[in-house]
Amino acid sequence: MTSVYETLERPLPAVLSAMEQRGVSIERSMLSRLSGELAQRMGALESEIHELAGEPFNLGSPKQLGDILFGKMQLPGAKKTKTGAWGTAAGVLEDLAAQGHELPARILDWRQLSKLKSTYADALPTYLHKETGRVHTTYQLAATTTGRLSSTEPNLQNIPVRTEEGRKIRAAFVAPQGKKIVSADYSQIELRILAHMADIPQLAQAFEDGMDIHAMTASEMFGVPVEGMDPQTRRRAKAINFGIIYGISAFGLANQLGIGREEAGQYIKTYFERFPGIRDYMEETKEACRRDGYVTTIFGRKCHYPSIKASNPAERAFNERAAINAPIQGSAADVIRRAMIRMDGALEAAGLSARMLLQVHDELIFEVEDGEVEKTLPVITKVMAEAPMPAKALRVPLLVEAKAEASWEEAH
Image (cartoon, rainbow, N blue to C red; front, side, top):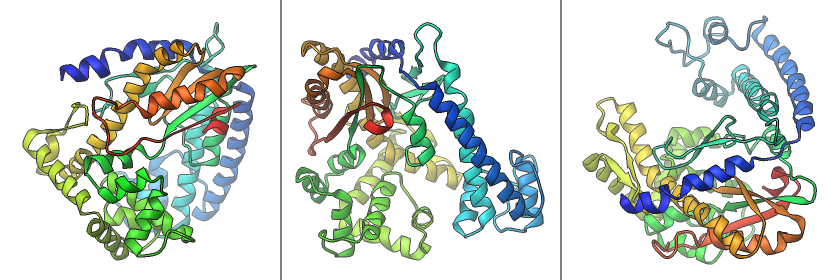
């Protein structure tokens, strides 16, 4: 543990402190416009939801929602919480939406817009510092089991990237006059680390050759050529690739792809037949965790899961999935820590004034002078790509994609 402490933990507070003090520039007017747009869309959704329910009710009240869904509409899957009210958590609504029920699907849309409005569009401007005019987040080094950093006040690591509204929030993170925002992102780092840790030759070779990994997986699984592949087939392989890392079940995959549970189960079975090393890795990892109570990342960080022996099957299964994922996610977190620790020194040594502002899981965000962009991008990508070297060289190359634009959204 000494080497984890000396190389990954002790040097990082100074790096994070500098990032927190630099802060990031946001465009207040864009956020207030977005807040108005979100309010309008929520109003329209509210009317639609009341119409579907056949009566007005308070969308923010789980009790009233439960009474409508399970009392009045008699939808399946009703469960009571400890307080005796119907459960209306996201998982319950997602299951109902997946079965084709429109009201729960609309409620989920409304909740997402409501969260974006209150957490970001309305709240971010309140974090603008009086003297700097910038937003300064706070990083926690030791808030997660896997070694991932987390950010609070405000949390900038949770802005949804797949929705149009989430992207509009990122568009409000802008570069000041004469500068650009650079986003540098590890491409598919967790799949690359899985290929290394589970020693999967086909995956490692595909990464080495710069192939489209999801298309290659689809080709292996469904026996179709990569050339001219149907996007739907690739999407299925992508869902399985990422799902496998998180220990997805046939039920979870069926929901995600909108297919039957049997078909989803068959996909997972075929996947393990094509890549037997992955199943071996999973079984060995669970076994090691049951024996030791923890799993380790490539760099030796311990992630503890003592509840893997719990008598409750649901708790046990959750801990098994977490234990499979932790060495992969934790190793990725360690790699980006190593990159961050070396970054300021490398930029300084190259005589560059770029400043690292934010870390969002597999991505680092910088502010760079317009005239220095061309010289800065290669330095950033080199430091990130070589972060695991030479201590724990990976069998698989790391690919870093970096782009400079006027806002975080354009650079991402």
